[in-house]
Image 1 (cartoon, rainbow, N blue to C red):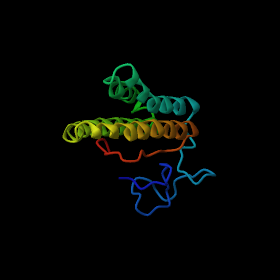
Image 2 (image 1 turned 60 degrees about the vertical axis):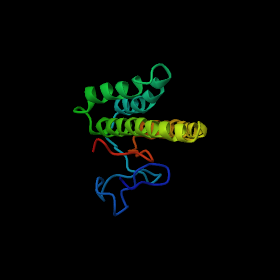
Image 3 (image 1 turned 120 degrees about the vertical axis):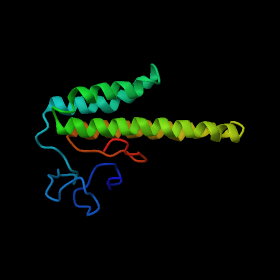
Length: 150
């Protein structure tokens, strides 16, 4: 996992952070950002994160939408590539965590299904924080995310 600040934004000064060079640009908030990312890339990256809302229509879209968006633009922009990987990793992590909660819910006579509430809150809050960071041009790492794509 990539070490990050308490709010999910990457910190270039952390010596454990191998993916960010120590001379990476930082904004006034102390966050690593891409000063060269134009508004169109920032908006696209923001929409990648907001695509989590596609699960409201169909659960399968929650992974398909960001995957298609990322595959379309990953070679054009390192900023979009990073945010796309992060959004897909988060979606896949949510799927794995959701599947793990099924046997817990069954073994606890349905009481374990209440664990879906904090998972949903994590997904919603993380998505909003990531979208806001992308819109500001900052790099972001979701909490509790398995790095399937590195």
